[in-house]
Amino acid sequence: MSLAVLLHAIGTIPLFASRAFLPAFLTSLLFRFPNLFPFTEVDAPSAELFITKTPVIIVLGILAVLEILADKNTDIKAIWLQGEPFLKPLIYAIMLLGVVDNDSEAIMQGIYMQAGMGDYIMIFFTAGAVYGLTVLRASIQQWLLEVDSDGSLFLHYIFSSIEDTFVFFGFLWLMISGVSAIIFFAIVVGILYLWQQKIKANEEKQKVTCFSCNHKNSPFALECSNCHTPQDKVYKIGFLGQKKDTQIDKETSDRKKHALTLLSQERCGFCATKTSKKTCPACKKEHILNSSENRKAYVMFVQKRYAMWLPLSIALGFIPIVGIAIAVMGANLYVFAPLKRQIPTVKAVGVQILTKLLIFLVIFFGSIAGFVVAPLYCSIRFFVWRTAFVKHWK
Image (cartoon, rainbow, N blue to C red; front, side):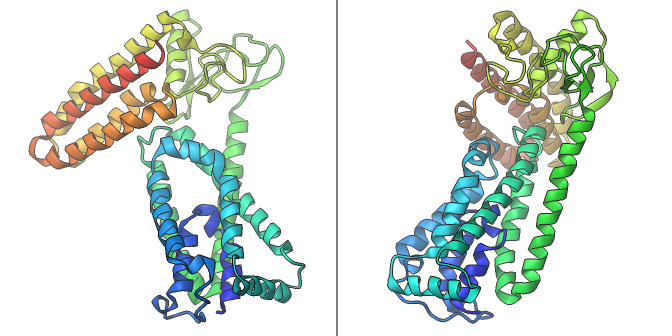
């Protein structure tokens, strides 16, 4: 496989849509050290080729590692998703061009001549394809954030690890058998597209029509986001944001409790729109937590969950490894997530660092004194997140 064909192929498959820097780093390694890939036929490129320079390889390697680590953190992921549809095509184009010297320009000209296209036209088409696939992937990632916005279920970690494997071994597979690799990538893209369409269809099916203005609302909405009419049919929401079959009563106390439950799922307490902003973009109402009375009620709401989970975590702590894991995951989902979801991503990073340290301590001491470590972990995290919540909404 020639250098020109390889460089062209690597940019036209979904590897750059999954990771921005890892495929770029692998490509640079291949061009600089072709002997590391004995199953490929790559001519040694010119030493002046931009992407083979040592500083470039080192920078790409560092960025690849940072990208992999950051992609497994939901807070960083939420920020990264906003910029990656534009960053990844740009990185792809830079790698495809590779172009600060005459040799690189000659390589690109060879690709255009073989493809029968005008100069640089191919880059725009393939960069557009990278953009489209990145947007498709981002929609799936956004859905995962809605289901597990704080990483309590480790869904993003699992999805990210699968992608790391996909990019690395997909790159190697592309070197061995380009045609079969591209067919496989096409199948993966098709599965992601069907998954995205299914998510959209399920969300649309769950919506309930307002009897006053016929506007479609979330099944969890207490009132219409369009006309603000209180809704008769309000369904309960599960821990994972799923719709339950049971409806809430029309009593005021039940509706207030449901509003607090919506907040714990990072939703508007009125129309149930997924948002963390202080003014809901759908119903235009101010956040419920702008009221000091509601803030106190919400803290008490979460504190009751903590009081229920604490004795259970002590019992689970007597079960080595598995019991502690259940105690930690359950506390993350049931107790800490409702507080964390009401704190901006930037402010939550510091607490996340402390969380990683605590998780390490739990793993280190877990097999020795799990019945102590599990409730201690739950207590420390609860009070840290509660303090951060109170300071933010003060």
